[in-house]
Image 1 (cartoon, one colour):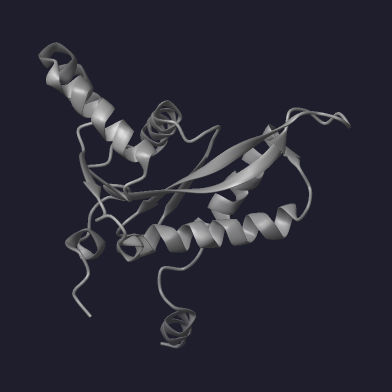
Image 2 (spheres, rainbow, N blue to C red):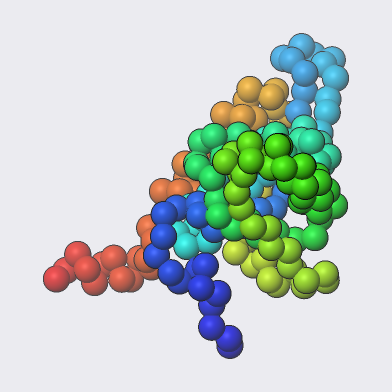
Amino acid sequence: MADLPTSRVQPHRPFLHVGMDYGGPFVIKESRRRNARTSKVYLALFICMSVKAVHLEIVSDLTTDAFLAALDRFVARRGTPEHLYSDCGTNYVGAARQLNSIFKDTTVQEQMISHLPCTWHFNPPAAPHFGGLWEAAIKSSKYHMKHVIGTQILTFEEMLTLVTRIEGILNSRPLTSSHQIQMISFR
């Protein structure tokens, strides 16, 4: 097995190196009325590459604009990442292309660089194993969501509350194995 990337093993502040992925779709309803219309939402996952802390966002669709809005909410809460890692999804490629076109204008470039000065890294095409860290986090998130939701259809507020609680559950796990924690507590 090859060595882990330096972004996974070097100490630095949380969410400096971030992996991203989408999960879903999940069906939500407009209101609590009996015959309320339903729509699809997606789960946008941002994971810290070093400490595996998770940030979850609800996204209304898979467009570049929706992703950029989720990225802006992430940056507002967790700080600006230095490196972003993702697969070659069209929404990510579109977002990177849109940011690159914005960066070509020198006046806008100075404003945007102070807002989001980061480097984007894409996995090679047809290589999902490169994103194992965020794929595992999506699997854990979906596991909790499916067990809580079951066959229910939640409203947007209920889904947002659930996603926030799942984020708390995923971020409350220990950073070492339980065997190591037991060994530490006996010393």
